[in-house]
Image (cartoon, rainbow, N blue to C red; front, top):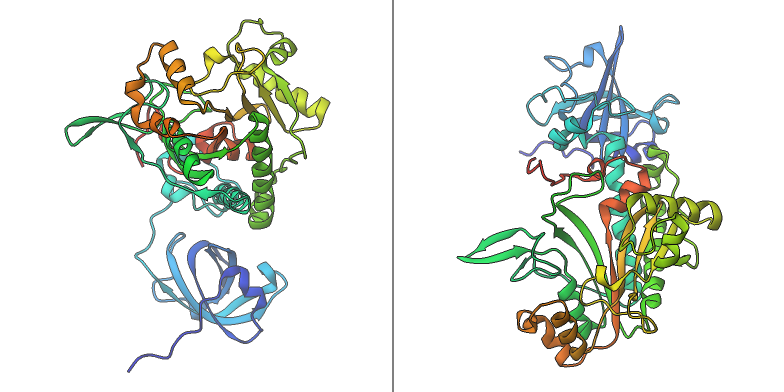
Length: 434
């Protein structure tokens, strides 16, 4: 005969809605044990928050309460208590451990702040991500993804997924991971660029969320060998400014989603969310160099230039974001559309968010003959790009797009000093585990 059915699970955040005197069932990890003379307060943590359980000495299970981080089931009675989270606690409990006793974690997860250095955090990521403040970081990321997808879905975009094993590099052969593909060389994809462009010819508007891989020997606080790229491509654009308009809407949608879906995480972290202006301020690359006092022949912006421009945009323009357009063509990939009135410059842009490059994008070439010329000018052979170029030979509309690095976005949201702090399981020059 089956035992009596226990009440449905009550999440910690729902406990305040339980009527006093009703039976409840909590399930979660032991977050904290506080032992007093006649009582022990057991704090249980689940995905929604914390709940307090009051255990009298005579109610203690044989062998005592399970140690912190042990998953448990608590059957008890909802009881009003002004001192408990949400004003309700659980009394008269029956506590059952759902696993063997947990080992002592590498840092005390019950403390308000996670007291662990970055190496400890990375070495013990599967455990230390449990800390409420640490977990809040990824809750921002998850909400941002909701906003990204929701904004684009509402604008008529189709989500696609491109291969991550590819036959050739997207931009150059120097920064790709080569793998053995059934005896033939292949590469981990640097970007879905070629595929999302081709699919503009199918769906007109596409986006993808997925990993990209860069075998660049960077050992900086802003680079990873694998990161999550939020890619967008849209057809029938007039130029890169149409791309910037969509980018602005996407960023605004991401901020709105963080507010809507991760409000408690924002409060837990004590951060200030950006306000995305109705129109993103734009500065030409040549003017940006002049503003930061860099030589006019610099091919790119250095990190200190980005920081200076970000400070200027914030102080003078009241904006956390700034678009820099017109990067030199010699520094952009071959598929970039030149500026029509001066082909030295490109119809491309980088978007700086709080002084850090977050987005690269712009208008692409769309005529087959222009691609052939661009590839040959850079010493390449169009035959090496035959699979990619066939879409253009069969007619492609003017198009453009952009890509956002998810981890960079979150790092700037929370003010992280190192992008690894906001990456669940970072991959870089030194780390392939956990």
